[in-house]
Image (cartoon, rainbow, N blue to C red):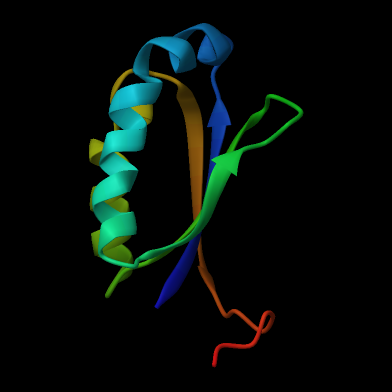
Amino acid sequence: MNFVIIGYDSPQGEAKRKIHRAAHLANLEILDKQGRVVLAGPLTDKTGSLLVVEFETREDVEDFVRHDPYTLHGVFERVEIHPFLQVFPKSS
């Protein structure tokens, strides 16, 4: 099942992001190697990040978010998780 994760930066998010980016990307690299990252990246208005990832359950994605360096170190002030149905591009 796909989930959208929207992480909203804290007031110190931009500064903390620079410090914890490598660890955050390493965390995502594990999922990417498993083919579970649909897309991921920062919002260009510097308000946070958007990820679309595949997990078995909502509990699994919540656990991932809870242990991600951006959550652990206060880059994200708030995180939303939503189940997501991909319509386009169509899978082959």
